[in-house]
Amino acid sequence: MKARTRSFLTVSAVALALGATSAAAENCEGQAGGGAVKLTVDTSSLRAAQGEVAVTVYPDNSERFLAPHGKLLRARVTATLPVTRACFWLPPGVYAVAVYHDQNGDHGFDRDALGRPVEGFGFSNDAPTKFNVPKFEAVRFRLPAGGKTISLHMRYP
Image (cartoon, one colour):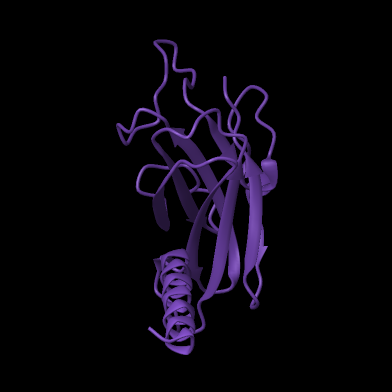
């Protein structure tokens, strides 16, 4: 095989691989287009790359925050270190995000007999959680017309 043909094939293979990576990275929840912008959620400080991280987006409505059936969108992504990333297509506006590390993959946020969390969790704005879940005002943020990446840290009991 001539060197020129080999170079073309190598460049083509790299371009296809990069395209596949780019396409996988764009596997966001929600519908692109129609004025939707991308919200990327980066979660760090996971204890282990096991199970999934459930990332839930809530609308600008304090009554729906953490309420049963209150979510707007949810992504379940494989836990990776050092950062687990999820993305969503949403119209610009105000939202809140809650995450938990479903380390055992049972699709539930596990608690002990007293109701205390046994899995990692976190909130947008890294809102503090001293004795209870944070108030909606502490976790809400604005998603601008240009899109946004937010970063939060997983907390473990």
